[in-house]
Amino acid sequence: MVDLDTLWSDDLACQVVCAMHPDGMGLDSIATVMGTSRSTIQAIEHSAMAKLRRMLPLNPAVGELFRAMAERSARKRSTWETMSDV
Image (tube, rainbow, N blue to C red; front, side):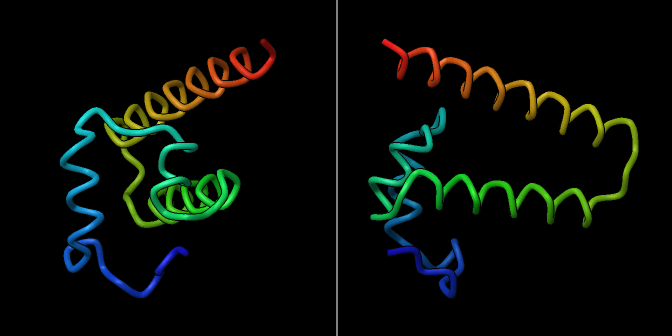
């Protein structure tokens, strides 16, 4: 179950999982840990990215950061889709 009321800084379990996976986790792994579906995690990610885009001032450095993150996300999606086709 996703707890949207607890801040990350107050969630010891979340901090432990993040510390155990310093290179990040895939949507499926996060969904398993959180006890929810992959699509729910994907929706949370999409919402968070949209919120960040609205909050951060649009300057070249921020734009480059978002392009890099979008490219990384697209590569991961492509890899996951290729694996699911097998």
